[in-house]
Image (cartoon, rainbow, N blue to C red; front, side, top):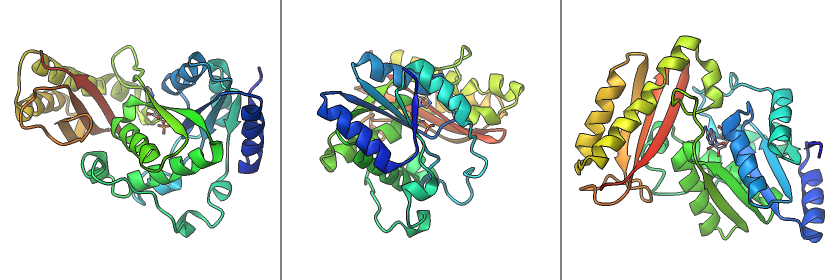
Length: 288
Ligand code: AMP
């Protein structure tokens, strides 16, 4: 079926309410566009789960960018996005303007959705206000879409936890589904921001994945001290000066706190700057 583009909230609501009235199940894949196979995998997961209508949303959300970040430069490619979403099996492409999403302007939004605790560290600490922007726009997308299953990537592991918790805390009629990270053959996690990288940077950015794998090996080999796991990760990351680290971490996957000892599965996370891009990635690790 050809992919239908819908730019208005009113149009989206009408189509989805009609579809649900006919018994259709709705799948939702929120994105900021510049789609790649990671995004396509979320659409394919929604189709495979039995969604009758799959909505892919394309919106570069000003609220989640700090003034110093790459909002203006963020890649935009609506025709490319259309082709990728359609090939993956999406039925609707929701493409609202900033005015459609924020009728009073982004600075005129008086209501903020803020998830406490799990946002204190990592991305939350390095990007103040980021998760409020994410939670607020996702709450709006959930309100616009209505009852659905919504697919998010583990690539943004802390974001997935924030969205999941928000939907539960606010009794939203949305099942949040996490999907595995899609990687380039060299291990680099696919990301719209990889478009900022030169060929050399793109191949060397695989050091982030090697850093995570080193952490996982340490945990699997019996290392129970999270500080030593972090040190192993940091050592690998330091092996290529192309990456300037923001953080490396070994945390509890639910609370994002650093455990005293590793006696249960942990999440290993890394953020680093490579050239013009700030890249993040993560991996699970279980003690033997
Ligand atoms: P973004 O457009 O970067 O905001 O991402 C939109 C959604 O796609 C989020 O749920 C991301 O976690 C997910 N995503 C981004 N990159 C990947 C990837 N490499 N593999 C799987 N999901 C991804």
